[in-house]
Length: 284
Image (tube, rainbow, N blue to C red; front, side, top):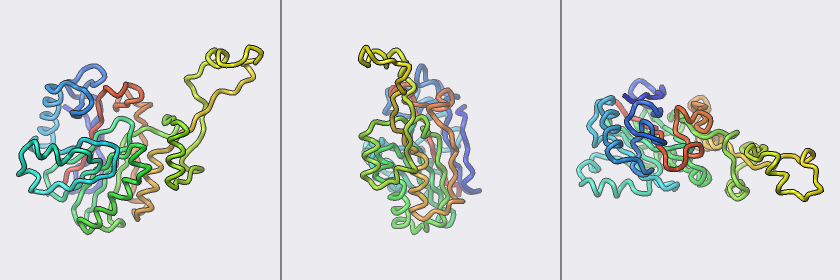
């Protein structure tokens, strides 16, 4: 049975992230993975989906998650969606990085393995949303855009929204190139609060010595440094900018890179590995 990290967003909602344990997938997908787009065996994905749906007590058709492409598009799941043929349902979910619904008994979610998953719940309108915020989506302010869409489509007030930031890579572990740092800077982020430089820990002294002129004393050389970005912090700031009260935002503070034994991390396991499923389901 899948092991779930559960979140408290209110009495009429189920919210969770899957842990790695409790499924049938093998190798770097071990063992609970339901993502179709990361290379896992189709048979294992089907079996894992079935056991999750049994645990949630829903039909498999009511488990909905998109093919994410690091964009900012949101898809709203309505009753009409379930009347479509399977191929059309799949097409509707192509290139989607945020999903929302006001239908009870429908589990919507996003897949991550270092990127930041965010869940939103509006208890007044009884609406839920799931967001996939990788660094590109974060630069494009997908969290803010999703809050804006919820106000437009469902009449949500940002002050009524509660949010959970699920397991993702932490500031200390998210090493990036200068071009990524520049992308955040160009997008108007306050780099003094969301970025820091840390030594490149994978550079051993012998490697540094080989890269230096022969006359240089390697003992006097400081380790190379690279930028690190605080992705959870960036998205928390976006939610605040969008109007959510600070008290309404919960960060689970789990770093996938450090806890890859419990949650999938593409940086530790490779891109051909499983994905965490972070989801929300409204109750009647």
